[in-house]
Image (tube, rainbow, N blue to C red):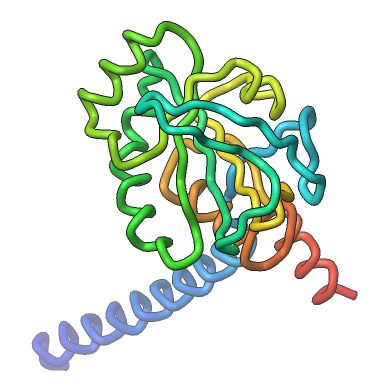
Length: 202
């Protein structure tokens, strides 16, 4: 047999084998994708539970403006409170994400930053990162009311002052998982995914 014909046959055989291998790998990737659930914000066991009425706290922002956290809001908007610290490196990484989300979610959500500690440090933090667009409160009682022990930590209150989502935030995906949890009316995206998985397997 002509060596050229033999080499062509071998090349075509190799192409067919490679195609079968690629299809098998694609299928396996699809299976893995279905098994891996998106990781939302980590909820801590302690503190106010989703669905409970948040305490109403009259506070003062660094700007001097009076701010009330909790209670019904006449404008019908929800409120996100992100607990941060000038000494928290992850908090600083998340600030651009928060500024972007402030614009993209502006139709239904207001945002506020909260911290505690030295006022001079807090003012320097606000100035350094251009956080004047957010109400910024320095209040130990606010953190205690939500049992915030690790940062950055976020909560979303609806227009009636009810806690609708909460959790540790380390990435844009974590923050957006709180928005989705609020929209879907679930405590967390994990709860939603577990419930969906249970309904499909029933």
